[in-house]
Length: 204
Image (tube, rainbow, N blue to C red; front, side, top):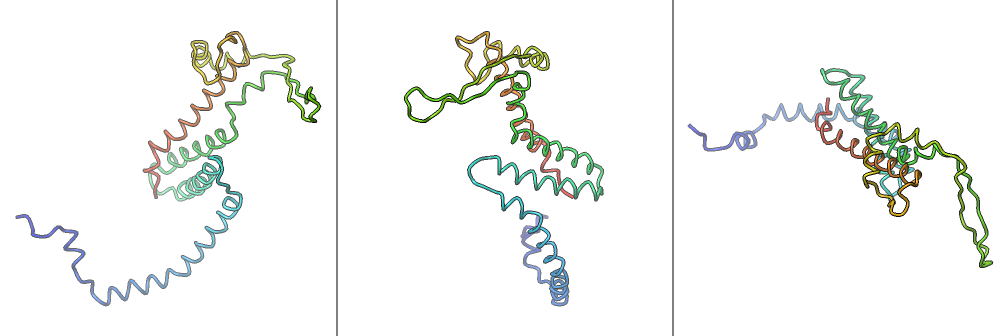
């Protein structure tokens, strides 16, 4: 027969014996020094990140996430008390590595390693005292870069990419820039896909 009350209502309404409540209070007081010690350790761990934090772009948001994942991966890996501990810690460290690559724009700037470019400032013609930023490509080996990402290269040649190629279809630098940006976007999506698929299981 179905009871009149939900089991949670029954537990809520049940009176806890006085001695048990006193025991809980004593345990809370006994845990206070550990709580304070842990709180100060947290303050010390987070101080460098909070000190450097700024609100103007996502770089700092990802730095906070990276700091948290670093602590959590170390904790779960060192305790190693469940069968997925090392697997979970590895996935966290992959996310940490991806955060570095996203924040450093590793993939979007990788194409520049395949070109030798000269940079200089040139005074404006209007005698304003301002200067123009000038560049000239001295040499390039973009074909080596394209060979590293043949599938992405094909996608760019088919028209994909944020940097328009209209009128510059044969410009290898524009092709390389598009490949770099697509790879950068892939790293960003992979980071959040791993978090989406695994983060809720990261507990000890």
